[in-house]
Length: 180
Image 1: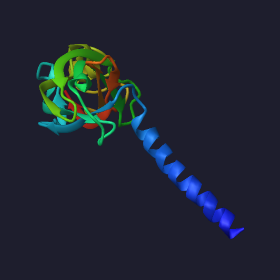
Image 2: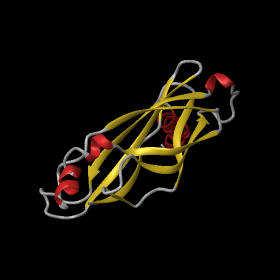
Image 3: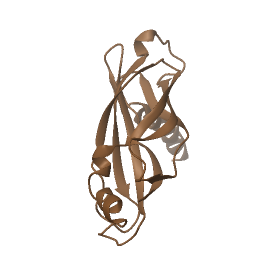
């Protein structure tokens, strides 16, 4: 009986290890993973009296080969196409600014990085929509009665390898306070 258990463990443990690796790396098309690896100049707050867009100083996008021991080529380089910004309330309010999709240009070489400068995360459309419109026009969020709105800002970048595989980053999230 003990020999059967040991034999089963020898079969199951490697299978779980392989399945665990596959589930992490095979979520997207292609042979590369795209990640947001660094923020520099990330704002902690936004003052609506300053005109939009509100930006991040430098944002670094990294491309990593799914098979680190495999052969790579320039066909795995990723052409960036767009990014999506979404918002979630961290305070007691329920209204959120509308999402935004923006075009972006750049190439991220396989196993390399690309820096994006002054990447916008909030634009005129968001400032002119609720709840930021109330904050700008009345000095308070009329839903909560507060003069500060706390938002999680989520950015997700989309691209395509030169060989034609669509790739995207996982959402990169940061929190800001929005004031009149």
